[in-house]
Length: 217
Image (cartoon, rainbow, N blue to C red; front, top):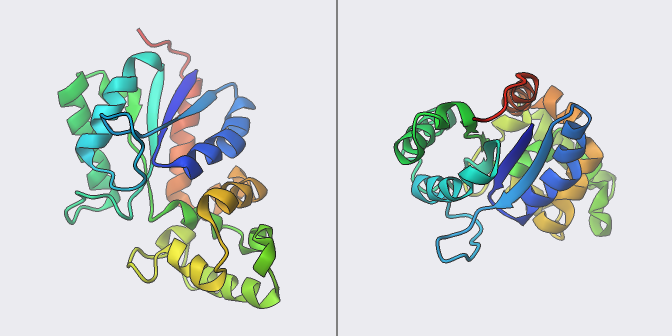
């Protein structure tokens, strides 16, 4: 089974390459990233909307057996008061209108709550890879953030308290594209699954795709 993961940005692309792909290859599933681009062909990080996402998936649709997405719920432009599940349903409905009923079976919209950085709070000790500022005080501050919530996915989405904002307040040299994929690789998928129930369900759904043994018509 070959699965295309439509990614919001370069960080997510590297995460798919260095962490998701090795994990799934051990289960006989081959995943590869595709970075979300505008119709002009240019990549613009953030500013993801249903229309932009659906148009891009429709472009990629015929080159993959199955497709899924890895984009942040935080910052999704037209979520319009919807929760992540409602927004995923809206994306799926728009895909059916654009591509046809097979989109229900072949495409799995997934939104990361609230940001990619939430996954990194699965193990605050892995932030040691932000070498310039790593020390015990930074670790304790990151740990306090994690311990303030039942799961990393509950770290909220206000502009001043989103996961990335909290990290930047503690580790000012933190760079999402530089450090994010390294930290994620150090943590590993299994730890993220244990800590992040929504992310875990996504991983289970992708594994189920690989196990169904059905080729795309």
